[in-house]
Length: 246
Image (cartoon, rainbow, N blue to C red; front, side):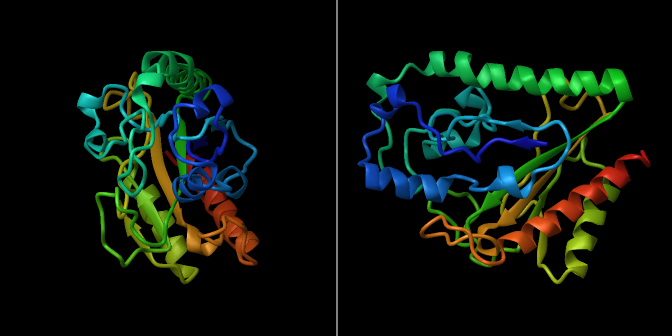
């Protein structure tokens, strides 16, 4: 279980690099954080939760901005712009390499080590990449289609078994939800050491629309929170059973 964007935590010594007021920062955090994903996707499996806000470091971006399409939006591995394209940070007060060494590299080493351990012990590993998304496109997002599904399933041609993504889509559809593959977001995380080289490492991204579980203005849970959590728990159990078949 990989949960990279659920944290609101910004260490005080990095707060000074962010030029937003406390009120503006709180609004940006609500917009950009996959709030409650650590609760919604909570399961008795190995789980990696990135402890810092993605506003400090986004571990799902490529390390080098030259490889990262979102760097053109000021949202490479170290964000410089907000979700509405305003200045987020004073770069002069930011040590990018320190952040990458201290947080990004350690996080990815942990992910790789866990995957290696699973391969050594079980000869296979399934990564569930856990996210949420805003019900309306944020200005920075590449996909501006306003008709967003309830759930998005992100896949990789090499690492996502087709039957796994289809099983997930079928389950959610029978529950009455609207589901799209790789829309509004696509792909799923795989450690670079195994990327496109080892099919025993499987990965699937699960994105849930925030309107299903929270007030997107205040960040507060809504009454349907537990219903959404239960659906996700059922889906995780389906993934668990499905893994035994390949």
